[in-house]
View 1: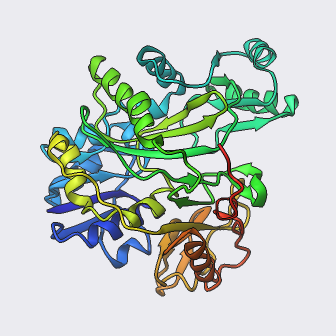
View 2 (view 1 turned 60 degrees about the vertical axis):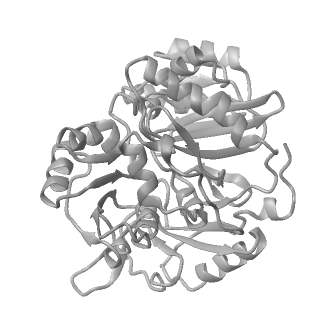
Length: 417
């Protein structure tokens, strides 16, 4: 099987690592890729946000399967264009990807399907924003209704900060959702689906805030770990039955079947499980800890979803142990990350490249806010965590920062439901 992965981050590097070890994969390419993917997959230049360009590359490269990593190409219609070219694609259509690109659309789908989620107020103007905040009360949850790379939400008890974020989104021409605050720990749950059958993967938890202790601004994710020792028994099956399957069924009923990776962000609240939001693709950095624990070959799983044959796929097999990933970020991330600095120690085991490039002299340099995702697998969460931070210590990037407490609360038993 010739597999083309579209994207350039650590998620795509993790996908390439998993696919490169699959005997069914005879050729692997990553477009546009990064300095890490180039070591295990053929590099190919492409504007990932241009569906026609993605389809043209898939055709010229004679891909059997295209795996679209990021949300922007999916929302633009990359999966549609690839399928129109007669090539299998793992990723939802642009219509189905509205589950991520429009939070209000996702809320309508959940409401119709009876999926438990936070109460919300759709805001189109400044006056509506004030009214919605009055009704919601603190802590205030204010979200950009559209794509925001994981950084479009503010959760705060400071009303002025909530108003300011809402105005920023509105002034930029966007729409705002004010939501009911959900207490309890959050879970990232991926599910592979062909539009009918749903196969959940292993639950993970990411760290969204930049600094230790969940302080600082929201980011695209500063680290993750799996599995979750504190998760209630039956959580995955409950989420499949009450969230994932009803959502997939409702999308099919609407004539907008969702095929690909449905990512449910869940909150385990005092009133039960609630959906925080949906994403339409593998999450980053959770992919970096889920895939290393998946024993089932990845290519066949993704191909079954792309070809509508997931019902006949064998049950998923998982390795024992745990995985932890720590994101090494550039100085200034997330507001104004500095790029172009040399990166060393980035070729070790478990070091996944996120925002990197190689200059004319062959030097690896930073090319984004999140530069590396350093991952380790261990016998348990404590061992995986120790190994991950030992690997982080070998990385050299001027001014880099990372959280020192990824998975620590779970190891110390401080997370309760």
